[in-house]
Image (cartoon, rainbow, N blue to C red):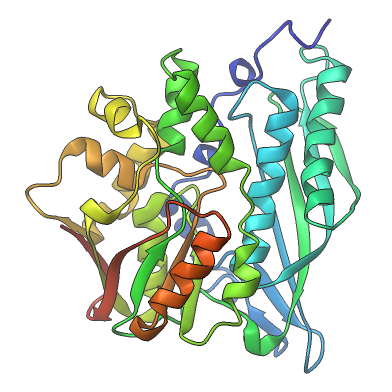
Length: 348
């Protein structure tokens, strides 16, 4: 068997963060799980659906731990590895932490995919980690029906610089650092409808590390941060609202979209995960009458290695945007704000 015998995406029923369980299903699974109460040093657990667990080691260090893995979103093995690693590290950055170590999670359908292709997947993940300044120090592998790759990622942060998705304040502006459309891109790729420019935009976005989160965590006026992944912009905005006890208003005209994503969405390209997302949380979202069905699809679209969603004091917005643009987050924009109100999102 050679690595060109089969398309990676043809071996999996889903791809990227579109593989995640729907938010409603995850809530049912976690409903009766014990809270962090007995563990005084567990600063962040499952209570607010944050991006990673955080455990205080001492007065100046907290350990940030996460795991993230999924099935192929592209057919190129090395790019699959790079995207999966970038996505996993994003959870560390979203907490304001600096990664220190990763372990690989590998599940491959042996006999259906070549050893050479598997080596390239692993090499892609290791290359991304090397660029982030950390080793892949081990991991675990199994023979599985579908190809799976990802990381356990560990990082460190000063407890006072820890960023959460539950600490937004009324009056904060919401900033999104990347454009939307990755899930729709992946669906179009499987259908043979993604043009070369769209493919290049997909790769550029999904391999751009969210390491700016480290610098953002130290800026005055930065109140909350999370990354936008499988639950789509609406889902992760709702998590921020629920954790902070606030309501959000988003302006669709200010939400940046990746090249061609609007056209694909208008033509009916969508993911099953996006529909499951809306079914899970749509009752807490109000779409103004001028928001079309295709726009709703983009707002629910699962983002693989998506951007950071920031809650920032109004006085800090210019400084935050200047930093993001200096770091080449060219899609970064203010997309709305949060205010006192029942946790919900209005899109106008």
